[in-house]
Image (cartoon, rainbow, N blue to C red):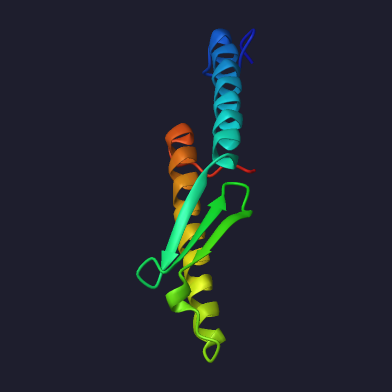
Length: 111
């Protein structure tokens, strides 16, 4: 093995590689903190139901238009709420993935 490095890799490259890895780790930590603070709105039923989902996957707000409340159709309202939450969750997942891919170049990281 060559002094200060691996075969075929000059000694200075290992230090550079470690510095790049540390920089990427800092960028990932910043992105994770930013994602946690996101607030994503999901809607259903022509915006009759709106929810706000946080990047921490907590539900922060639910708005239900009174016109969609039918005591005889609780299941329909439940379906609208689920649809709005699922829409927000899908948008959050895409936003999170896009932000991480911008840092990692699309390489899946073990976290």
